[in-house]
Image (cartoon, rainbow, N blue to C red; front, side, top):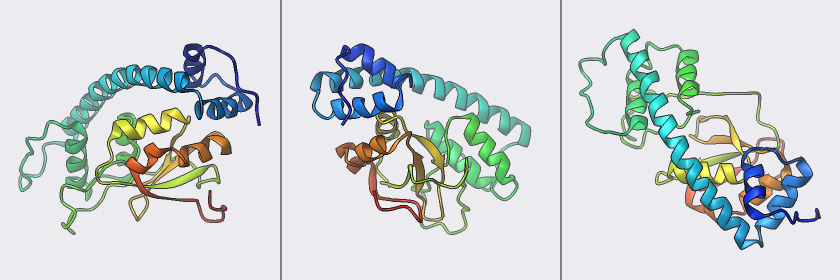
Length: 217
């Protein structure tokens, strides 16, 4: 077991969020996080600040990206009434489904990458409509054993998913697959195991699965 760092919570949490820790330091951080309430509180506070800034940036960037793309491809099909929803993610999901028959898969993936969303378009607003083609985006190589497939709950909040991923230095590796799962990648096995044992995951996902050929985590 790595020796926990005696560094002050603020400096240590900032180093974690910035990705400045070595593999050994990341493992020590995860171990310390399990029993250091002050470090957890500091990380939560810093993450709340980061969430607010990130959400502001994502909202602005996504609105510009989708506005530019819609201007280039023309208005929505006349047979599809416009929604009054103010959620950009809901509008993006609806717009991509309505244009799925004319958009190249690579273009859909490019739009999702540009707006900071990888395969998180949900069809929960119309789950029984078999005429709506789901939009899928994939990024990266085949999943490694440092990834996990996550089946998100219908009630999962993006803020909770982002917090869980940031806490353990995770990133999107691909998905959704045919079952609607997303693939999440971790830097090391210690972070992966700690993330899977976090109670926050129970609020986000119904189940997790290791990639084929990997031992169950």
